[in-house]
Image (tube, rainbow, N blue to C red; front, side):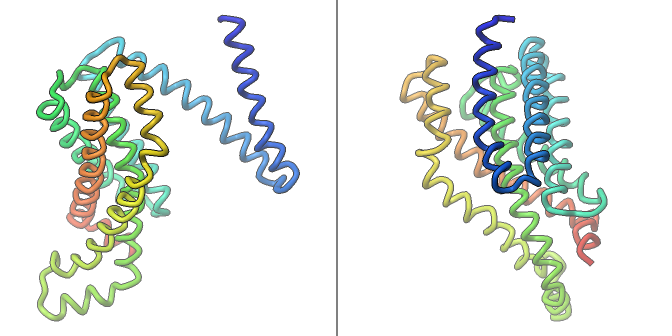
Length: 252
């Protein structure tokens, strides 16, 4: 290994003394947890880098699909954990919802919008990863809102059912709240996106050789894709959870 790389890595790690020192002075009980999180993050980042490198190196459609399925399953566990759901009844619905929503929107972008070789790992992995990351964040918001509303206002559901509404019609007020929980932060985030994450992505695109107009178009496509995928994932997940009866059971 290059000795300069070791030195630069050490110098970068020294920056962690700033948050560690602040915790030591003000909230010492959180220091051990902070160190554990940093170590776990480093290990996860190393594994992720090696995994993506292997996928790009092999460039196999089957391996790319296995990676996407594994990512959906792992993300479903994260969503369930962040939503503080007990048991594993919702995991199949979340995993399938994530996979279907992300895959359908991703393939639309890769095949019809860009268009490129859909299963070329150089395109498939970053497009699907970006859609998955955004969808997971929004699904946590939307699913938490949906389940919390269904639990808190279950009497409203029973009232609507008692007045002759179908099951799907009675669920619409709760689905509306879940949709707003996804759409409202998305609208707010889009207004500040140009000052936060977009410049970093644009720099990467320019370094990759894209012209300004191509970078603009690609960012536009991916932003639209992220918004659409998050809504589609939420819809699939709620419908599948309702079909399985897991959503209602987890809140009764």
